[in-house]
Length: 118
Image 1 (cartoon, rainbow, N blue to C red):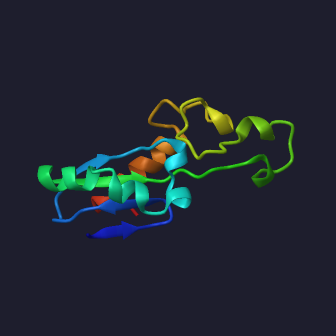
Image 2: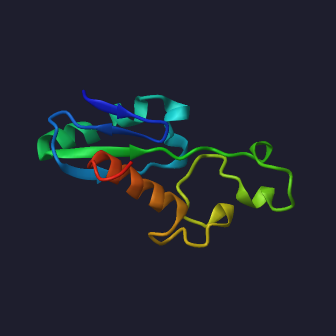
Image 3: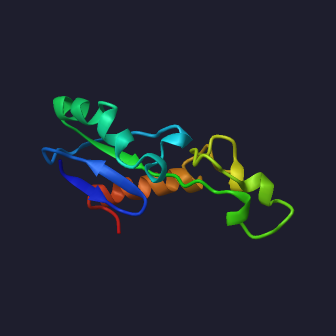
């Protein structure tokens, strides 16, 4: 299995194929919680091999109140399970758009994998 490991994502590309799919996960399925269990046992890599697709597994990060600076808004910015931002936490008002922090990060990962980014 060929893997590109970074602080933010893992990618599976057994046959150096150029088509790409991203697999987002439920928060409790983070690599920091489950290790390699999620991305090696859900069957996505086998599906990718069959269909000639690279699978990108971007990683979110769990954040608790103790991880944040003590402010009155800190409890509103937690992400205890490391979920993808589907509710606008951390004051990301663009979370549902291409300008959202996480969507922009995933796009940067895609650019790196395709050799078009830094």
